[in-house]
Amino acid sequence: MDPEYALYGMLSEKCDVYSFGVVLFEVLCARKVFDLSLDEYELDLADWVRQCISQGTIYNVIDPYLKGRIAPECFKTFVDVAYCCISAKGDKRPEMGEVELMLEFALEMQEKADSEMVDVDPHGQCMYGEVSFCIPVSDHGL
Image (tube, rainbow, N blue to C red):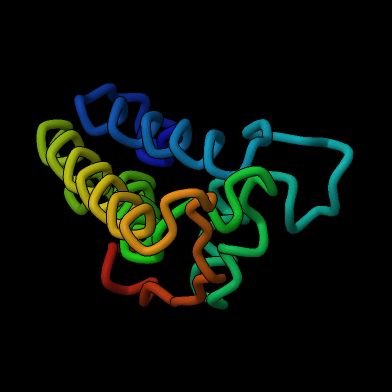
């Protein structure tokens, strides 16, 4: 739930952006928003991914099926977009149109990287190395 909605009870388009960001992380990490079977620090997906991003460990918690299949620059863009969407402050979140454009850009980067890999090894599977990066928490209003 959007933290501002939880505090003030007012809905806005930015509430939808927050929810969409959470969905992006659900897909990336292949897990539910709340999982009571996990440790306390992993219980809430949004809080957990913020922590993983700030520690540079987000790649370690993605869906194992996706590991190695996402081009590093695409992965960074996807995570950055999703991270901006779950900013605690609505005015720091992008507009949904901006989110759409950035996700399209990430897809184009992935397709380009995959085509370059196929050019190198036409019979191989496109596999990429591990990705590690941090997004400064203060940059997104958290």
